[in-house]
Length: 230
Length: 125
Image (cartoon, rainbow over all chains, first blue to last red; front, side):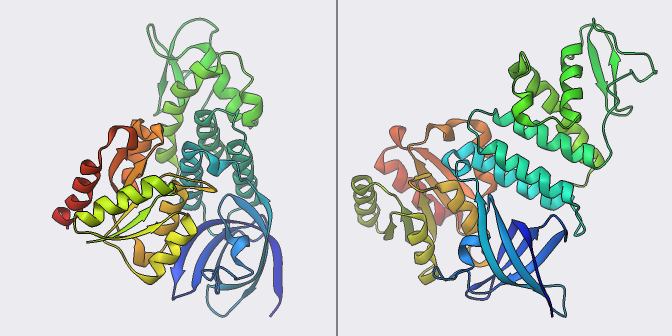
């Protein structure tokens, strides 16, 4: 049996017998790997440091006869240690890991691995607004799955105007112009930037970003469960 | 009633331990996340009273770590913390989902209230 060596991020850890754990590990090239890590509950295990959350590790594993692989080596390569210095960032980190684990199949592609490492990187930087990271992450999940809303024209196909106010139609996945509605051209422009895949660090520099995040997050949080199993 | 108290501060830990013992609880007091996990390996408590500010780790990590073990998923938590963020509704509801049955902000909590919250676990059980 050949050992496969790759990079991995732990998505889930459950206990197995006294000292072992079953890990769900997201890799860039082998999707999600379910592996048995032996002895990791013993503090002296050489595997223990490589199976921490909020980190990227170099892992080695062997496929067995069943669905469960066996983890043979794990070496921590990047540890996003600032995340756990802040309770809200830690909570969001766990939430994003859990969400990604739920929405991805075992054959998850490299884009999900990159999304999670980018999210850890943003969470690790205290300067980046936590709600922005939340919005950005959920938006990228929609984008990767091909559920980007129409941010160029309204539901009737008319070009969106710079003036006026808009409603978001969840059925049409597009904005509709309507007086006294909560969204402006600024919100739509911002959503375009987020859906274009710009990094949170870049989005943070948008003028007036603080007031744009939560209204946009409301839209994205409503769209997400309607299009992706969460 | 067996209580696992996770409190890094020596003075506050002693006060809480003594008060809970005087109220009839058997208390195992640990000052770090790792020693708390080691203690769980030896004896299952009825409740875990935990500070969220634990030096190298934060208590949220410890809560998630504990919940990742099937045999420890039913143990209720009481958060007893100096961290004012627990007063934020969003964090409180997230903690609730982790099985936190009471959130006590230390500057506004008396020892009697801590004991009452611990005793309440018995009622809930």
